[in-house]
Length: 396
Image (cartoon, rainbow, N blue to C red; front, side, top):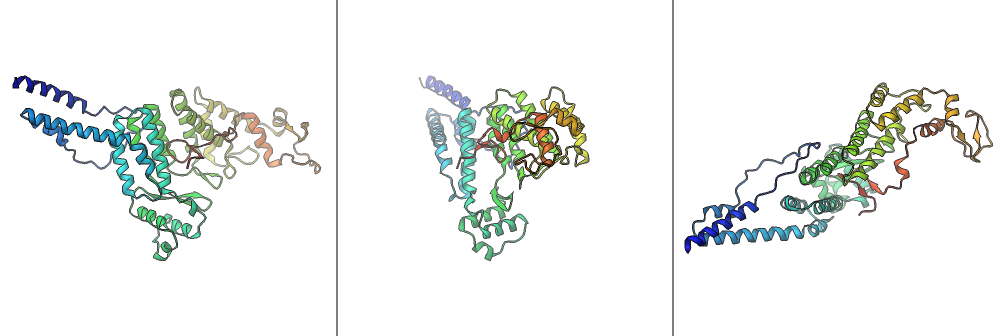
Protein backbone atom coordinates (compact mmCIF):
# COMPACT_ATOMS: atom_id res chain seq x y z
CA UNK A 1 0.00 0.00 0.00
CA UNK A 2 2.81 2.40 0.90
CA UNK A 3 4.48 1.72 -2.48
CA UNK A 4 1.22 2.53 -4.28
CA UNK A 5 0.87 5.78 -2.35
CA UNK A 6 4.45 6.71 -3.09
CA UNK A 7 3.96 6.04 -6.81
CA UNK A 8 0.88 8.25 -6.89
CA UNK A 9 2.74 11.00 -5.06
CA UNK A 10 5.65 10.85 -7.51
CA UNK A 11 3.21 11.13 -10.44
CA UNK A 12 1.75 14.26 -8.85
CA UNK A 13 5.24 15.65 -8.41
CA UNK A 14 6.03 15.22 -12.10
CA UNK A 15 2.79 16.97 -13.07
CA UNK A 16 3.50 19.87 -10.74
CA UNK A 17 7.05 20.23 -11.98
CA UNK A 18 5.93 20.30 -15.61
CA UNK A 19 3.27 22.93 -14.86
CA UNK A 20 5.81 25.12 -13.10
CA UNK A 21 8.06 25.43 -16.12
CA UNK A 22 8.02 28.99 -17.56
CA UNK A 23 6.51 29.38 -21.03
CA UNK A 24 8.92 29.87 -23.94
CA UNK A 25 9.60 33.50 -24.87
CA UNK A 26 7.84 34.78 -27.97
CA UNK A 27 10.03 35.49 -30.98
CA UNK A 28 10.22 39.09 -32.17
CA UNK A 29 11.73 38.85 -35.62
CA UNK A 30 11.73 42.54 -36.54
CA UNK A 31 12.44 44.06 -33.15
CA UNK A 32 15.89 44.29 -31.58
CA UNK A 33 16.59 41.67 -28.96
CA UNK A 34 15.81 43.08 -25.48
CA UNK A 35 19.01 44.04 -23.69
CA UNK A 36 19.43 41.82 -20.64
CA UNK A 37 20.13 43.35 -17.28
CA UNK A 38 23.26 42.51 -15.31
CA UNK A 39 23.55 38.72 -15.29
CA UNK A 40 22.67 37.13 -12.00
CA UNK A 41 23.40 33.68 -10.68
CA UNK A 42 20.06 31.89 -10.92
CA UNK A 43 19.47 29.30 -8.26
CA UNK A 44 16.87 26.58 -8.44
CA UNK A 45 13.81 27.44 -6.34
CA UNK A 46 14.08 25.84 -2.92
CA UNK A 47 10.59 24.36 -3.20
CA UNK A 48 11.46 22.57 -6.44
CA UNK A 49 14.74 21.40 -4.95
CA UNK A 50 12.95 20.02 -1.91
CA UNK A 51 10.66 18.05 -4.22
CA UNK A 52 13.60 16.39 -5.87
CA UNK A 53 15.24 15.68 -2.54
CA UNK A 54 12.08 14.26 -0.97
CA UNK A 55 12.40 10.56 -0.11
CA UNK A 56 9.25 9.88 1.85
CA UNK A 57 5.54 10.60 1.29
CA UNK A 58 5.59 13.13 4.14
CA UNK A 59 8.47 15.05 2.59
CA UNK A 60 6.72 15.03 -0.79
CA UNK A 61 3.48 16.29 0.71
CA UNK A 62 5.30 19.08 2.53
CA UNK A 63 7.08 20.17 -0.67
CA UNK A 64 3.82 20.17 -2.64
CA UNK A 65 2.17 22.35 -0.01
CA UNK A 66 5.09 24.81 -0.22
CA UNK A 67 4.71 25.06 -4.00
CA UNK A 68 0.94 25.57 -3.73
CA UNK A 69 1.40 28.37 -1.22
CA UNK A 70 3.96 30.13 -3.46
CA UNK A 71 1.72 29.78 -6.51
CA UNK A 72 -1.26 31.19 -4.62
CA UNK A 73 0.87 34.06 -3.35
CA UNK A 74 2.05 34.90 -6.90
CA UNK A 75 -1.51 34.75 -8.19
CA UNK A 76 -2.64 37.12 -5.46
CA UNK A 77 0.16 39.57 -6.23
CA UNK A 78 -0.66 39.51 -9.97
CA UNK A 79 -4.40 39.94 -9.36
CA UNK A 80 -3.66 43.14 -7.41
CA UNK A 81 -0.91 44.41 -9.71
CA UNK A 82 -3.10 46.98 -11.47
CA UNK A 83 -4.00 48.52 -8.12
CA UNK A 84 -0.34 48.45 -7.10
CA UNK A 85 0.76 50.27 -10.28
CA UNK A 86 -1.91 52.92 -9.93
CA UNK A 87 -0.92 53.54 -6.30
CA UNK A 88 2.54 54.78 -7.32
CA UNK A 89 2.50 58.53 -7.64
CA UNK A 90 4.24 61.82 -7.02
CA UNK A 91 4.97 60.93 -3.39
CA UNK A 92 6.44 57.50 -4.09
CA UNK A 93 10.13 56.64 -4.03
CA UNK A 94 12.33 54.81 -6.53
CA UNK A 95 12.18 51.67 -4.36
CA UNK A 96 8.44 51.50 -5.04
CA UNK A 97 9.09 51.61 -8.78
CA UNK A 98 11.77 48.95 -8.56
CA UNK A 99 9.50 46.68 -6.50
CA UNK A 100 6.82 47.14 -9.12
CA UNK A 101 9.24 46.18 -11.88
CA UNK A 102 10.11 43.01 -9.95
CA UNK A 103 6.41 42.11 -9.68
CA UNK A 104 5.88 42.73 -13.40
CA UNK A 105 8.72 40.37 -14.28
CA UNK A 106 7.00 37.70 -12.19
CA UNK A 107 3.50 38.29 -13.55
CA UNK A 108 4.01 39.10 -17.25
CA UNK A 109 4.97 35.55 -18.32
CA UNK A 110 1.50 34.23 -17.38
CA UNK A 111 -0.64 37.26 -18.39
CA UNK A 112 -2.83 37.32 -21.50
CA UNK A 113 -2.39 40.04 -24.13
CA UNK A 114 -5.21 42.27 -22.89
CA UNK A 115 -3.80 42.25 -19.37
CA UNK A 116 -0.27 42.92 -20.61
CA UNK A 117 -1.41 45.93 -22.65
CA UNK A 118 -3.37 47.26 -19.68
CA UNK A 119 -0.33 46.96 -17.43
CA UNK A 120 1.74 48.72 -20.08
CA UNK A 121 -0.71 51.63 -20.24
CA UNK A 122 -0.83 51.83 -16.45
CA UNK A 123 2.95 51.62 -16.20
CA UNK A 124 3.44 54.55 -18.58
CA UNK A 125 0.91 56.62 -16.65
CA UNK A 126 2.65 55.64 -13.42
CA UNK A 127 5.97 57.04 -14.65
CA UNK A 128 4.30 60.30 -15.68
CA UNK A 129 2.92 60.65 -12.15
CA UNK A 130 6.17 59.63 -10.51
CA UNK A 131 8.26 62.11 -12.50
CA UNK A 132 5.60 64.79 -12.90
CA UNK A 133 6.64 68.33 -12.13
CA UNK A 134 4.33 70.19 -14.50
CA UNK A 135 3.38 72.78 -11.91
CA UNK A 136 7.03 73.84 -11.66
CA UNK A 137 7.67 74.45 -15.37
CA UNK A 138 7.20 78.20 -15.03
CA UNK A 139 9.19 78.39 -11.83
CA UNK A 140 12.51 80.20 -12.24
CA UNK A 141 14.24 78.19 -9.51
CA UNK A 142 13.13 74.93 -11.16
CA UNK A 143 14.50 76.08 -14.52
CA UNK A 144 17.79 77.10 -12.90
CA UNK A 145 18.24 73.68 -11.25
CA UNK A 146 17.23 71.70 -14.36
CA UNK A 147 19.40 73.71 -16.75
CA UNK A 148 22.36 73.28 -14.40
CA UNK A 149 21.78 69.51 -14.35
CA UNK A 150 21.35 69.42 -18.12
CA UNK A 151 24.71 71.14 -18.59
CA UNK A 152 26.43 68.68 -16.26
CA UNK A 153 27.35 71.37 -13.78
CA UNK A 154 27.31 71.11 -9.99
CA UNK A 155 24.12 72.21 -8.26
CA UNK A 156 24.63 74.30 -5.17
CA UNK A 157 22.82 73.92 -1.87
CA UNK A 158 21.41 77.40 -2.33
CA UNK A 159 19.80 76.34 -5.64
CA UNK A 160 18.21 73.27 -4.07
CA UNK A 161 16.75 75.25 -1.19
CA UNK A 162 14.64 77.22 -3.67
CA UNK A 163 12.80 74.17 -5.05
CA UNK A 164 10.31 71.92 -3.27
CA UNK A 165 11.31 68.64 -1.57
CA UNK A 166 9.95 66.47 -4.42
CA UNK A 167 12.14 68.25 -6.95
CA UNK A 168 15.13 67.79 -4.66
CA UNK A 169 14.36 64.07 -4.44
CA UNK A 170 14.10 63.67 -8.23
CA UNK A 171 17.32 65.63 -8.65
CA UNK A 172 19.01 63.15 -6.31
CA UNK A 173 17.83 60.31 -8.57
CA UNK A 174 19.34 62.02 -11.61
CA UNK A 175 22.63 62.47 -9.81
CA UNK A 176 22.67 58.81 -8.73
CA UNK A 177 21.86 57.51 -12.26
CA UNK A 178 18.64 55.85 -11.05
CA UNK A 179 16.90 55.64 -14.47
CA UNK A 180 15.88 59.30 -14.20
CA UNK A 181 17.31 62.04 -16.41
CA UNK A 182 16.70 65.64 -17.40
CA UNK A 183 15.08 66.33 -20.76
CA UNK A 184 14.87 69.70 -22.47
CA UNK A 185 11.49 70.02 -24.20
CA UNK A 186 12.24 73.28 -25.99
CA UNK A 187 11.13 76.88 -25.43
CA UNK A 188 12.72 77.00 -21.99
CA UNK A 189 10.88 73.96 -20.64
CA UNK A 190 12.54 71.09 -18.78
CA UNK A 191 11.12 67.84 -17.43
CA UNK A 192 12.29 64.68 -15.72
CA UNK A 193 12.51 61.68 -18.03
CA UNK A 194 13.20 57.94 -17.90
CA UNK A 195 14.70 55.28 -20.16
CA UNK A 196 12.08 54.28 -22.74
CA UNK A 197 14.20 51.38 -23.98
CA UNK A 198 14.17 49.84 -20.49
CA UNK A 199 10.39 50.09 -20.49
CA UNK A 200 10.14 48.44 -23.90
CA UNK A 201 12.54 45.70 -22.85
CA UNK A 202 10.33 44.92 -19.86
CA UNK A 203 7.18 44.33 -21.93
CA UNK A 204 8.33 43.36 -25.45
CA UNK A 205 9.13 39.67 -24.73
CA UNK A 206 5.51 39.08 -23.70
CA UNK A 207 3.80 40.77 -26.65
CA UNK A 208 2.94 39.47 -30.15
CA UNK A 209 5.45 40.37 -32.83
CA UNK A 210 3.55 43.35 -34.26
CA UNK A 211 3.14 44.93 -30.82
CA UNK A 212 6.73 44.24 -29.77
CA UNK A 213 8.08 45.77 -32.98
CA UNK A 214 5.88 48.82 -32.42
CA UNK A 215 7.00 49.60 -28.86
CA UNK A 216 10.66 48.87 -29.59
CA UNK A 217 10.63 51.38 -32.46
CA UNK A 218 8.76 53.94 -30.38
CA UNK A 219 11.32 53.58 -27.59
CA UNK A 220 14.13 54.24 -30.05
CA UNK A 221 12.52 57.24 -31.76
CA UNK A 222 10.97 58.93 -28.74
CA UNK A 223 13.87 58.80 -26.33
CA UNK A 224 14.66 62.33 -27.49
CA UNK A 225 12.27 65.10 -28.51
CA UNK A 226 11.03 65.57 -32.08
CA UNK A 227 9.93 69.22 -31.75
CA UNK A 228 11.88 72.17 -30.37
CA UNK A 229 10.27 75.59 -30.73
CA UNK A 230 8.33 74.50 -33.85
CA UNK A 231 11.54 73.13 -35.37
CA UNK A 232 12.21 69.49 -36.27
CA UNK A 233 15.11 68.15 -34.21
CA UNK A 234 16.12 65.16 -36.34
CA UNK A 235 17.96 65.11 -39.66
CA UNK A 236 16.31 64.84 -43.07
CA UNK A 237 17.82 61.38 -43.43
CA UNK A 238 16.33 60.21 -40.12
CA UNK A 239 12.97 61.68 -41.08
CA UNK A 240 12.96 59.66 -44.29
CA UNK A 241 13.97 56.51 -42.39
CA UNK A 242 11.09 56.93 -39.95
CA UNK A 243 8.56 57.53 -42.72
CA UNK A 244 9.77 54.41 -44.54
CA UNK A 245 9.63 52.33 -41.36
CA UNK A 246 5.99 53.16 -40.68
CA UNK A 247 4.98 52.68 -44.31
CA UNK A 248 6.53 49.20 -44.19
CA UNK A 249 5.01 48.47 -40.78
CA UNK A 250 1.51 49.23 -42.07
CA UNK A 251 2.06 46.84 -44.98
CA UNK A 252 3.53 44.07 -42.82
CA UNK A 253 1.04 44.29 -39.94
CA UNK A 254 -2.26 45.57 -41.41
CA UNK A 255 -4.24 43.97 -38.57
CA UNK A 256 -1.98 45.15 -35.76
CA UNK A 257 -3.49 46.30 -32.49
CA UNK A 258 -1.51 49.52 -33.06
CA UNK A 259 -2.42 50.01 -36.75
CA UNK A 260 -4.26 53.33 -36.23
CA UNK A 261 -1.33 54.72 -34.26
CA UNK A 262 1.10 53.47 -36.91
CA UNK A 263 -0.93 55.27 -39.59
CA UNK A 264 -0.87 58.44 -37.51
CA UNK A 265 2.91 58.22 -37.13
CA UNK A 266 3.32 57.65 -40.86
CA UNK A 267 1.17 60.71 -41.58
CA UNK A 268 3.22 62.88 -39.19
CA UNK A 269 6.58 61.88 -40.67
CA UNK A 270 5.36 62.02 -44.27
CA UNK A 271 3.88 65.48 -43.82
CA UNK A 272 6.96 66.94 -42.13
CA UNK A 273 9.16 65.26 -44.73
CA UNK A 274 7.55 67.19 -47.56
CA UNK A 275 6.38 70.38 -45.85
CA UNK A 276 8.81 70.79 -42.94
CA UNK A 277 7.50 72.91 -40.07
CA UNK A 278 7.21 76.57 -39.06
CA UNK A 279 10.89 76.74 -38.19
CA UNK A 280 12.27 73.96 -40.40
CA UNK A 281 12.47 74.15 -44.19
CA UNK A 282 14.09 71.74 -46.63
CA UNK A 283 13.90 74.15 -49.63
CA UNK A 284 13.84 77.87 -50.27
CA UNK A 285 10.51 79.73 -50.05
CA UNK A 286 9.89 79.31 -53.77
CA UNK A 287 10.46 75.54 -53.50
CA UNK A 288 13.00 75.55 -56.31
CA UNK A 289 16.27 74.82 -54.50
CA UNK A 290 17.10 72.42 -51.66
CA UNK A 291 18.78 74.06 -48.68
CA UNK A 292 21.03 71.08 -48.04
CA UNK A 293 23.11 69.34 -50.75
CA UNK A 294 22.11 65.91 -49.46
CA UNK A 295 18.36 66.61 -49.49
CA UNK A 296 17.89 66.21 -53.24
CA UNK A 297 19.96 63.02 -53.34
CA UNK A 298 17.92 61.47 -50.52
CA UNK A 299 14.58 62.47 -52.04
CA UNK A 300 15.58 61.10 -55.46
CA UNK A 301 16.53 57.82 -53.81
CA UNK A 302 13.18 57.75 -52.03
CA UNK A 303 11.35 58.34 -55.31
CA UNK A 304 12.80 55.08 -56.67
CA UNK A 305 11.27 52.81 -53.99
CA UNK A 306 9.03 50.10 -55.39
CA UNK A 307 5.34 49.90 -54.46
CA UNK A 308 5.60 52.92 -52.20
CA UNK A 309 3.20 55.81 -51.72
CA UNK A 310 6.15 57.77 -50.34
CA UNK A 311 7.95 57.27 -53.66
CA UNK A 312 4.96 58.62 -55.61
CA UNK A 313 4.78 61.69 -53.38
CA UNK A 314 8.53 62.23 -53.77
CA UNK A 315 8.13 62.05 -57.57
CA UNK A 316 5.33 64.63 -57.43
CA UNK A 317 7.46 66.89 -55.20
CA UNK A 318 10.44 66.78 -57.55
CA UNK A 319 8.18 67.43 -60.56
CA UNK A 320 6.62 70.43 -58.80
CA UNK A 321 10.07 71.94 -58.20
CA UNK A 322 10.66 72.00 -61.96
CA UNK A 323 7.45 73.90 -62.84
CA UNK A 324 7.64 77.58 -63.75
CA UNK A 325 5.44 80.12 -61.99
CA UNK A 326 3.13 80.17 -64.99
CA UNK A 327 2.86 76.37 -65.10
CA UNK A 328 2.16 76.23 -61.37
CA UNK A 329 -0.58 78.83 -61.67
CA UNK A 330 -2.19 76.96 -64.56
CA UNK A 331 -2.15 73.68 -62.69
CA UNK A 332 -2.89 75.03 -59.22
CA UNK A 333 -4.73 78.37 -59.50
CA UNK A 334 -5.17 80.51 -56.42
CA UNK A 335 -8.67 81.19 -55.13
CA UNK A 336 -9.45 84.72 -53.92
CA UNK A 337 -11.48 85.33 -50.81
CA UNK A 338 -14.70 85.69 -52.84
CA UNK A 339 -14.08 82.40 -54.61
CA UNK A 340 -12.86 83.88 -57.91
CA UNK A 341 -9.51 82.85 -59.36
CA UNK A 342 -6.56 85.20 -59.35
CA UNK A 343 -4.83 85.31 -62.74
CA UNK A 344 -1.68 87.05 -61.55
CA UNK A 345 0.07 85.76 -58.47
CA UNK A 346 2.36 88.80 -58.50
CA UNK A 347 -0.39 91.40 -58.68
CA UNK A 348 -0.11 94.18 -56.10
CA UNK A 349 -3.69 94.73 -55.01
CA UNK A 350 -3.66 96.78 -51.83
CA UNK A 351 -7.45 96.58 -51.57
CA UNK A 352 -7.47 92.80 -51.38
CA UNK A 353 -7.74 91.62 -47.75
CA UNK A 354 -6.61 88.24 -46.44
CA UNK A 355 -4.95 87.43 -49.75
CA UNK A 356 -2.31 84.70 -49.85
CA UNK A 357 1.08 86.12 -49.01
CA UNK A 358 3.66 85.89 -51.78
CA UNK A 359 5.95 83.75 -49.60
CA UNK A 360 3.08 81.31 -48.95
CA UNK A 361 2.02 80.86 -52.56
CA UNK A 362 4.47 78.06 -53.32
CA UNK A 363 3.45 76.10 -50.22
CA UNK A 364 -0.22 76.56 -51.01
CA UNK A 365 0.33 75.20 -54.51
CA UNK A 366 2.56 72.37 -53.24
CA UNK A 367 -0.24 71.19 -50.94
CA UNK A 368 -2.55 71.15 -53.94
CA UNK A 369 0.02 69.17 -55.92
CA UNK A 370 0.77 66.52 -53.28
CA UNK A 371 -2.76 66.12 -51.88
CA UNK A 372 -1.59 64.66 -48.57
CA UNK A 373 -3.65 65.77 -45.58
CA UNK A 374 -2.19 67.38 -42.51
CA UNK A 375 -2.15 64.91 -39.59
CA UNK A 376 -3.25 67.78 -37.34
CA UNK A 377 -6.46 68.35 -39.28
CA UNK A 378 -7.86 64.96 -38.23
CA UNK A 379 -8.50 66.03 -34.63
CA UNK A 380 -6.36 63.15 -33.43
CA UNK A 381 -6.25 63.34 -29.65
CA UNK A 382 -3.08 61.31 -29.14
CA UNK A 383 0.54 62.10 -28.45
CA UNK A 384 2.68 59.61 -30.38
CA UNK A 385 6.03 61.34 -29.92
CA UNK A 386 6.85 60.98 -26.23
CA UNK A 387 6.52 57.36 -25.03
CA UNK A 388 6.45 53.77 -26.29
CA UNK A 389 2.75 53.88 -27.18
CA UNK A 390 0.50 56.75 -28.25
CA UNK A 391 -1.09 58.46 -25.25
CA UNK A 392 -4.35 60.37 -25.05
CA UNK A 393 -3.61 64.03 -24.40
CA UNK A 394 -6.30 64.17 -21.73
CA UNK A 395 -4.79 61.33 -19.66
CA UNK A 396 -3.44 62.60 -16.35
